[in-house]
Image (tube, rainbow, N blue to C red; front, side, top):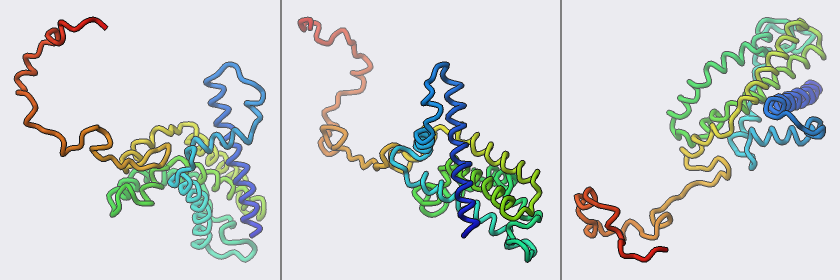
Length: 252
C-alpha cells in the first residue's frame, strides 16, 4: 500500500508536468503575446489538456484508456517481478534484474507502439467489431500511451527512491524517455482524428449520441410517399435550358 501511494503521488506529478509542458510548447509556438496567468494557472491548464484528450463529456472510451494505461503500468511491473528470481531484501519488481528493467522501460512502450495497429485490426475484425469495448479503447491510443508512459516513469522513480536497487542512470534515462514519449503523443494529438471511428460506429465524437436516422426524419416525404412514375424522362433533363425557367416572372 505504501508503494502504491508513493507511485500515485509521483504519477500525478509527472502526468501534470507533461500536460503543462505540452500546453506551454503549444502556447509558445502559436502565439507571440500571452498573459502571465496563462502560464501559471496550472489547474485550468491540466484540466484543459485532459478535456482535449477525453472530450468535453468525458467519453467512455477515452476514460477507459486513461485508466487502462495506468493499470498496465502496474501489471507490467508486477509481471516483471513475477518472472524474476526472488530477492528477499526487496519486492521482486524492485530488484536490479533485466526483466524489471525491460518491463518498466521505454523499450516495452516501443514494442507496444509498433504492435498497436495490428491490435486495432484484430479488435475490429473480432466479434462485435468497432462497437466492442476493446475496439473503443484501442481507438484511444494517445490517452492510453499518456498514462502508460507517465505510470512507468513514476514506477521507476518509486522503485529507485524506496528500495535503491536499480541503477540510477538507467532509471533516469527511463523516466525521461517515458515522459518525453508521453508528452510527444499528447502534443501531437488531434481530437478530430477520432471522429471517423465514432461516426463509423454510429456515434458522435462530441455528444456521444447515436445517429438513429429514418427517411421521414430527414425529408418531408418518407420513402413510401415517393412516386417514381411522376419523374420525367431523363432525356428532358439533358436538354434542359435554365434560361427557359420563369422568363416572364417579375424581378424580386
